[in-house]
Every structure is written in C-alpha cells, then in structure tokens.
Image 1 (tube, rainbow, N blue to C red):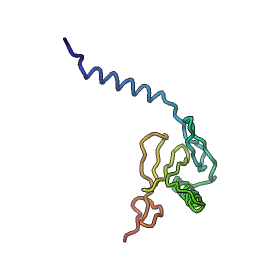
Image 2: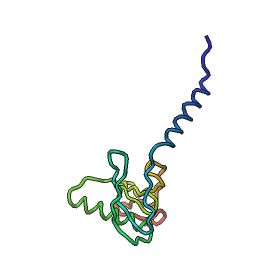
Image 3: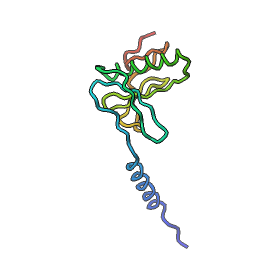
Length: 130
C-alpha cells in the first residue's frame, strides 16, 4: 500500500488556507487626513470608529490623544490597558509595552512608541538616559 506524499498535501492545505484568509473580511481604517479615531471591535467582526480628534499633525499625536483617553477612563475606574485607534489608514494599538501600528487590524504590528519607566510614551531612540 502506497502512502500519499506529504509535501503535495501540505502545499494544498497551505494554498487553501491562504485563499481563505485572503477572502476574510478586512475593515480598513479611515483615511481622513488628520483625523484620529478610537476603534472598537464589534462581536460581528466589524469595527466601530468613534471620532476622537481632528487636525492631528502626526500618528504620534493621535497616539497621545488615545493615551489621554485611556488614562481618563482609568481615572473613572476602568482596568483597560489595551486600546485600539486609527489614524490616516493605519491602526494604532496601545499596549502596556507601547504603541504599535499596522495597516490592517490583524496585520503585522510595528512598534512606534515605547513606554518609559514611569509609563509615559516616547519615540524609539528618544528614551531618556537614566
């Protein structure tokens, strides 16, 4: 009795998986110039975008607005340490380690801002020396 070769079977499975992931519904972040959004993932897979601030000059300024919002929620008793936002077509992910960005909600995330020892956000390379 011959065994089916594993390589072709694995190739078929990976191609089908790639096809299905490409067909998955992607929710693009708003492209509005200078607008900063708070993004709320909904249970049906959509994302609700709440207008947070207009005329933001940079992604870092939007991240600062989101961090300010997170701290205000924390002052009201929220235990939330993660927050999602959007700026000019990019998602922002506020996490305990810092702020990450990605072009899609489930895409690869790249570090933009890091947290200092006292919890503030700083650009990479501009960390204060101790």
